Amino acid sequence: MLNHKQTLVWIKGPVGQLETLYYPPQSPACGVAVINHPNPLQGGLNTNKVVQIAAKALADLGFHCYLPNLRGVGHSEGQHDYGRGEVADCLAVIDFARQQHPDAAQLVLSGFSFGGYVALFAARTCRPDVLLLMAPALGKYKIAAPEAYDPANTLVFHGEKDEIIPLHNALDWATPQELPIMVVPAASHFFHGKLMVLKQWIERLLPALLAKPPR
Image (cartoon, rainbow, N blue to C red; front, side):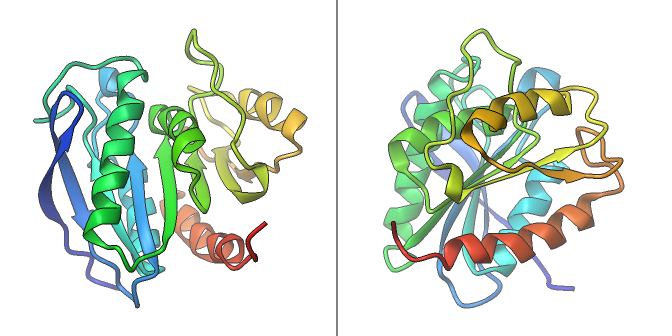
């Protein structure tokens, strides 16, 4: 088992400093990754177990991983904006990460639940090499989540027994895009008891997307 050490960094966002956890890569660096947390109104933070396991998987694959607390969350400045201002926060973290690691060319943008909703909007601007979503909050907010900017480079995991964002929400969103959903059998929204399964499948499937030639 690799020893994933994290450090705290502060990143200047549009409305103030963003409290951010950083995981260094555990293999030769190939890129940067930003992983967004779930709904803070229900206790979502960058210490969430799904966010942490995704970061560990990406660090093992060679990514510099940044896990921000978006505006108004934890000790980050600003106020929660229900996914609107958080997109600008996410893009600011991506810009910072790329400036810190200019030789790490690839970008993975990720998010769990509310964080996946934010990532879908942010991806329209930053165009990541891979968009990695875990139980994204589809069909949850008044402003509907956009389609994936590039379904062929999007990887979505969803629990079969998700009690917060039903699986059919994800299927209804994905079907018009012909975007496969990776269903984790018997998993709840928080992937209780399935976190290592989630990590293993991220590590198996994501490299195949990164290895595809540019379109």
